[in-house]
Image (cartoon, rainbow over all chains, first blue to last red; front, top):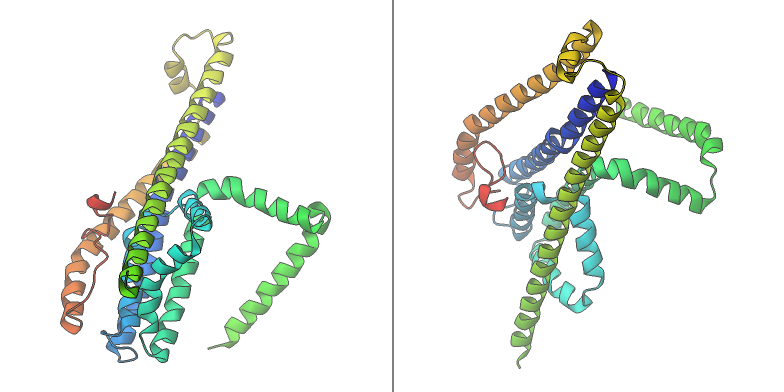
Length: 182
Length: 135
């Protein structure tokens, strides 16, 4: 009896992780990127940057691309792209990269500085999306973490309490600073 | 070849290489996704097979489903109820969010186009779903 219900629960859990949870991750990423795009639009509407600025148009276009293809963004795709890029002729890679960079460089410095923040936040959102994949959480993160710790010669079991304490202290300080900044 | 011509050839080669990289990454991603799904399905099927195997010699009731229905405990029913209820609640909220998105999208587009006539779009559907062309 319990064996069967456990199997059904396991099937339901896997369905949740690989189905609705993945859809939720894509929707969450899109929501964050839409928020960024709206914020950038508001900055342009307030006159902080021109709607015809090449930096604004390039950044908006980049955000649109990210929103549009969020569903295709995965750890395996990203890893393949990075891996293939390493074997590519650097001259060819640079010739392509010039498209976005050239449009950004054509804009005044203050416009470039303004959009740089949005690009950074968008990249953080993408990284979080990729790292929150159930496959990455289940397979890659523990493996990489153990590998790094082993490389550093750290005995995990022995260091765990002090690692937790120092992390908690850091978060406490961080929360204190956030609480003070009204 | 002139410098301008060489530059455009380089750009075309770069774009071509980028598209190739994207195509390969796309196929790798699809394959990995399929393999993960298939592995999960196989794992569950294997577990069910183990289950049936272990029950085969012990149960006198031939119909497992009847047995299952008869032995449902209140605590088990409650936990399943919470799980299924949670999923249904999530689905309902998602549906509600999509209908709100659909209702507000057109309005936002019109208002923003009034300020920026060259406003570019993400090409998602009105409900915020992936464009069928991009699937």
